[in-house]
Image (cartoon, rainbow, N blue to C red; front, side, top):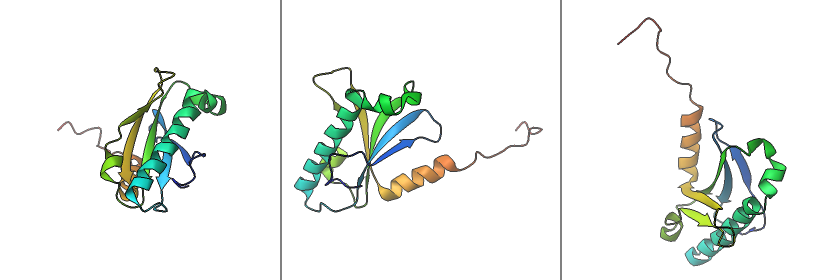
Length: 129
């Protein structure tokens, strides 16, 4: 799992609410120079887009054909300003294919998982206030 390895999908993650699948690109800090890091991310995002656009995602995960797909970029170190400005990626040859992109830190990702995994506060059925 690395940005430097642009030809592979790091993680396929089904959200706890099962309403979307996130393709997770993990930036473990192996590309420290900001410009190179952003270029590595762009190459990785292109791989993820092609994985979905060419139909490979649906061939491997046909059970998820009815839910949305997005990309999460999880960074061990704080993302660069350029990385934070990425909100999606679109295939110009197949304009119907657009994947939203969210860039966050590893700490934010783990907090999100804890929040979604926490059981809902139960209220007594006899209380009306």
